[in-house]
Amino acid sequence: MKFFQDFRFGFMAPFQGIRFLFQHASLLRLALIPLLLNLLLFIALGSLLYAKFGYFLSLIITRPEQWYWLILYYVVALLAMLLILVIGTFILCLIGNIIAAPFHEWMCEKTKEILVGKNIPSSLPLWQETKRILSIQCKKLLLLLVLEIFILLLVLIPGIGAFLSGGLTLILLAFQFLDFPLGTDRLALSSQFKNFLTHPLAWLGFGCGLSLMLAIPLANIAVLPSGVIGASLLYYQHLT
Image (cartoon, rainbow, N blue to C red):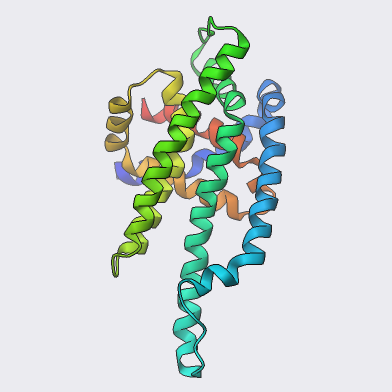
């Protein structure tokens, strides 16, 4: 029962983040740039997939000439589209999080202040604080890219490869956002990993919720700020 509740809390967190965002004007002001950024990234990703999906599919399977193979072809095409969407979602959120990282960290700190009380501000000047945040996010980018390459190699495992790669990609997607509240509390990487092992279905549910939000028109525009706020709500209300 606890595992089901973990998954439900995680899955609903991004959508609760949207509601929380519009309930607090201070957060909404911080979210304007990430909202515009996400809109541009989503348009770019959608245009790329629309223009190049046939090419991506041809790398996996070619359209058969015999009619009786068409069912298998369309099943593989559907699975390929879902896998490309999941990976595209991961890349979109990764790039968006890197560029808008300072705004996301400030939004996370503001959400923490609303939820648990006054947050201790950083003593660094604004430009040094921005530089620190971007440096951390670039290191995270390298780590996530290495892990994503490993995940793509899992696709080569017959039978369960696509399932494993999809699940791990969803968990990495969740980590991109949960890293902000985890980082705000200055948790070491070992402590972050321990949190994942304690609540794995909450992390997985959060990744599923983010992916579903990206598939919903209009809601996908708000995925970056609502994902950061949703991660903060999930962490401070359920994972601590």
